[in-house]
Amino acid sequence: MKPSISSADINALLCLLPNTDADMQLIAQAQPVRLRTTYFGTDGEQCLFFRYPASTELVNTTHLIEPDTQVVIRYVLDEPYGEVVAFKVRVLKVIYSPLPMVITSFPSVLQKLGLRSQKRAVSGVPVEVVLDEQENRQAEGLIVDISKNGCKLLIPFKTVLQVIQSEEKITLCVELAERTLLIAARVKNVRIEKEFHAYGMQFEDYDNQLERLLERYMITL
Image (cartoon, rainbow, N blue to C red; front, side):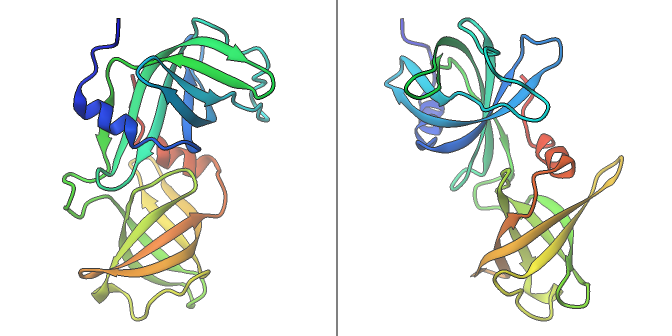
């Protein structure tokens, strides 16, 4: 029997393109284990294909994922939605050769957390931007469309004296209730969007502070 998944959820899955990075969280462990994977594709509405996650300094993934393991998949869906999408699936099969791969069931429901309140609204994570290469001058901005690799940064025209140049380094300061996160990033592209300078940012490192920020936009299933 095919899973009873809504047409809106099907559309969100169709936006998950092959070779997209995603999170794979194992929920059967004593402590949830979150790993990085890559989405390969789907066989209609029968199953999904993911790269078998590589081991990290903290987690040895060898034989960690087995059939019947329950996992949560999370990914960032960019335009036009601006959402973090998550769904729970069951591992059907693990293949080690010629390519390490995890085959999962097809999800029956998706959960979504908007990075923007509306598709056309400007909302996101307020940040203070420190211009490292402009004598540490500061500006106010918004982070939108965030992923582990980078984000889209919007800065109103009126808050910055000049356009930040491509490859320029900046520091993003994010105020959380318990602490201030300092995230190093580099400008990769610049464009104009209405009353904003829109910057495509690449994070310099994937560290604990960036992971803490990303967790604020991850859905707990």
